[in-house]
Length: 120
Length: 130
Image (cartoon, chains in turn cyan, blue):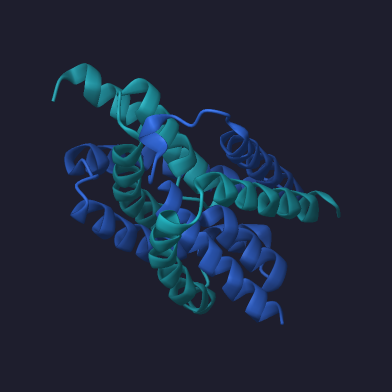
């Protein structure tokens, strides 16, 4: 792997890691577009490879947060079961629903969440 | 009712992960903070643990479709460590309200990207079925 390419991967990883630690997300929102634009990935490769990196990033971030005593394992277990079922559902949805409808639906959901968080 | 809504959010978060190649944390965090009574910081920390199995299953499925560049993914993931440590440290010193507003801004940014995608008149060819 050429050094330049490794440096790009490292920069993307560090940025995604910072977002992950700061907001409790995987960092895919950062990685997918950067892999597309900066490393010339195709869309499917970018999403697949992003998920692979998230396994490592989320594991590292969980361990660091656990040191601060913030991780609730019971709540995590409660959400992990439906979440894992959701992954299979997402793949199935992909085949049946138009992608734009799915995107619009999630966009609306996120706007509602933002309002809920911003309004004290 | 609140637990049912939290479970619905978790299901949607997992689906988002499978669809877009993200972890789904953008929905797990509000599920924990809004419906299960966690503080924003606890919600973010616990969300990370939920993301791990989602990303493992997602990677496994994508790998069977030949969409995972394993070496790149692992390189990126492991080299992320300094960013992770810095991000978690900042999250732990920021006031709760700042963290909530920051997360809300991040969610709006993602909503904007999804909205653009939904309204794009000519979706790129690579998008089909991905």
